Length: 142
Image (cartoon, rainbow, N blue to C red; front, side, top):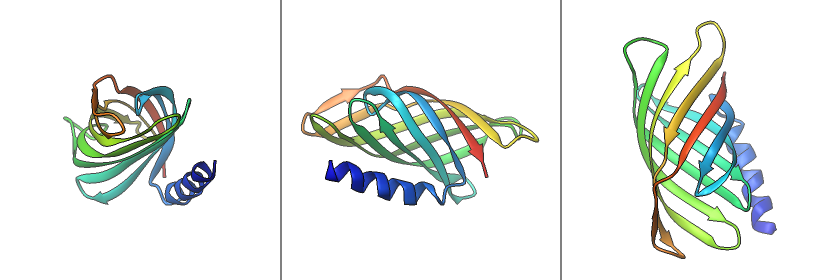
C-alpha cells in the first residue's frame, strides 16, 4: 500500500506538467484496465508517452516516442517508441515495451484520439513476451 501511495503522488506531479492528458482504454501492462494517459513534448519530432493504469494492480509506463511525424497532413500523426514498463500487483513485473500508434488531432477543438499497440517483453519476475497490448486513447490538448 505504501508503494501505491508513493507511485500515485509521483504520477500526479509528473502528469501536472503534461501537454496532453487523458485516458487510455485497453490492455495496459498486460492488465485489461483503464489508464491515465499523458504526453510530454521533448522536441519537434519526439515525446514521452506515459501511463499509470489501474485494475487488478497498478501499471506504469514511460515510453519515448522517438519518431513522431505527421501523416499526410496536419491532423493525423504516427509514432514509434520504446521504454520501461512496470506492474505492481500480486506479482511484480518489469520489462521493456514498444509502441506503434496513430492519432488524430481535431481542428479547432483541443482533443486528440488515437489507437496504439504496445508489445512488452517482461524481464523481471517472469521472462515472457506479451503481444496483445492494444488500446484506444483520448486526450485533452493544452
